[in-house]
Length: 114
Image 1 (cartoon, rainbow, N blue to C red):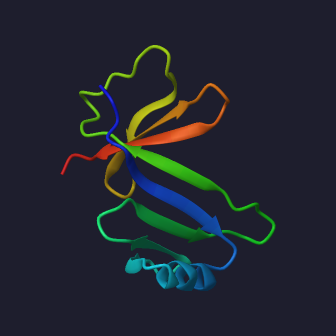
Image 2: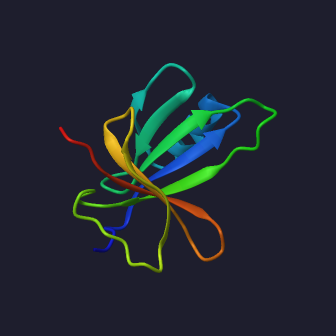
């Protein structure tokens, strides 16, 4: 079974407010803010952007999450190295981690049981 494109981009920042304004200036709309230096933005029907503030002494990272329609029905080809199988997340999805041939980690995200 294949993935269904990009679900989300997780972006860490040193300044939530500046980052939110930057993406809003590029056409993203703020959908949710947790009030803790994080929030979700979206531009139309495209992938959502989760922005989270991290301490100044930590290098901000970016993580891309690929969409999977059904975690139980998903069985990656043996060429795909599974680092962590699907697990429930605190935000209501299921997430799997895989490694590409160059060593980068990718998140695969499926709907949780709702």
